Structures are given as structure tokens and as C-alpha cells.
Image (cartoon, rainbow, N blue to C red):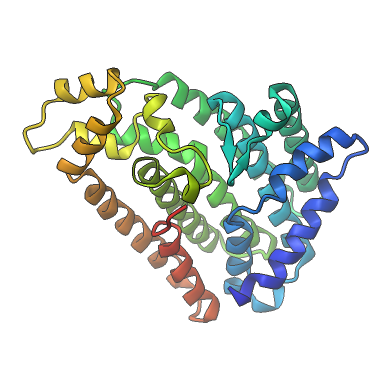
Amino acid sequence: MKLTDEPVKEIDRLIMEQIKSPVELLNQACFHLITAGGKRIRPRLMALITGLISPDAVRNMDILSMGAAVEILHTATLMHDDVIDEGLMRRGIPSVNSAYGNKVAVLGGDYLFTKAYNATIKATDARISRVFSDALTTLVQGELTQMTNTANLEITEESYFRTIYSKTAVLFEITTKIPGLILNRTDAEIEALAKYGRNIGYAFQIADDILDYTSDSEVLGKVVGKDMDEKKITLPLIYALNNDRGISRETIYEAINGGCVERILQIISDTDAIASCDKVAERLISEAIDAIAVFSESDYMQALRELAYASYRRKY
């Protein structure tokens, strides 16, 4: 995506600059994950939103610095998530906890959290620190909420969306909101940008939840089937549990509690649960695109439409 290549390259440079530590073990652990690649969807998203608002601002250093901060924050959450979930692979390589141990992964994640927040303190708009602080609180609450809902087969779709907002969508939301704050847009425009990011975040997480059932580890870059193993009740399973195909909840309970992966996959297929997820994601993406229609048509607008669909229609 040529519109974002240069801003993302600069954000990557700022990330490496901001996280460098005099403690070599910290550098090794943090660089291990940062340099492993990743989609960089949030930096690209921030660059495109900035261009949508004002093409002349795509090299605004305040915004680029915040793009780095958001990606650092995201990386910190991945390091902690892999400790909590005992994940062994991330981005196609051993996770930080697998390569360096849980203690280093936890401390490395803590270090990255502080680096991300420190970047916001230097921002010229005080609202950005509050946005970051609120997002951190939401992320922690989301992780704990998901833990308490483990194996809760009565979880509702509404509860699922509250959880994925806290775990995923909130970071997309602040990614698209921050350029609007820095560039002093109206409250209505900032909310439109936030809605775009929030909905893309929802669709992105639904895609992740589907891929846990449909992908393979080599393509996905991490172990598939983790949600099933850990009895995390995500949207495909919620739709399967509430199916109208005559498959009883008791049958599904038995498959889940018995760890019958093949049976669960067959139930997901037989109940058209993935198709139901597709409909929800399509609606969310459509609403996201409609939200930013308040801005002028441009190459950035078209790129944001494409990114919206790509966030869901992906293989990893």
C-alpha cells in the first residue's frame, strides 16, 4: 500500500528508537517480537486516517510518534497474552515466553507498556494521555472478563462484543481517533473516525475467531484450535449453540467438554455459524465505511474502504 509505505517505515524507526534499552536482555526479548513482522495494520490505519483528514499531515511527527506508541502497546499485549494463554508461537516464530521464559515476557511486556505511555506524555494534546490511559484500563478489564467467561456456554452475543471491544476494538478505536484529536477536528468527526476504527476492530477479531477454526498453524503463524482447547466461547460457537438446525445444546456441550475438536468443527459447519459471522462482519464494515463518508473522497478514502474489507477477508 504505497500511500502508507513511508509513514509506516518511519513509525518502525520510531518504535526501535523508543524501545531501546541499556538492558540487553530486554532488547533481545522485545526486538524478538517487534522484528518478527506482523501486519502493521494499526500504523497503516493511522497513516490512512491522517491522509483522509489532511494529506499534508501524513508526516506529522506527533501523529507518527503516536502510531509507534499504539504499535508498542499492541506488542506489549501480545507478550502478556502469550504468557496467560501459554502460547508457544507468535508470527510464525517461538513466542517471547517460549524463547525467553515467562518472567522475561512479563517484564518485557511491562517495559513496553511504560514506553507506549511515555510517548503519550510528550503529546501536545492532553486528551491523548487520557485516551491511552482509558484504553489500558479497558484492555486489562477485557482480559479478565474473557477469563471469567471461559467455558461459559450461556455467554450472549452482547457479552461477546463487550469482551472483544475491550481486547481488540479499543486499540483500533484509539488508532483512528488520535489523528482527529491532534489535527483538531470536530467532536462529530472524531466520533466518526472512532466508529470506523471500532467497527474494523470488531471485524478483525471476528476474523481471528473464525481462523482459529478454519486455518492452519503454518499460515496463521500461531497454534490454531487454542480457543477450543481453552474453552473460549467465541462468535462461531455462540451461533452454533443457538442454531436452528436441530442440533441440541447438550450435543454441543458434550463435544466441547469432551474436547472433540473434529465434532465441534463439524457442528460449526452444519449450523452455518461461519456464514452468520460473515453477515455480522459485513454489516460492521459497511457501517464503518459509512461513518467516514463525512470526509472528502480521495485515494485515502478508497484505501480505507479496501483496508476495511481486508481486515476481515484474510488468511492470517
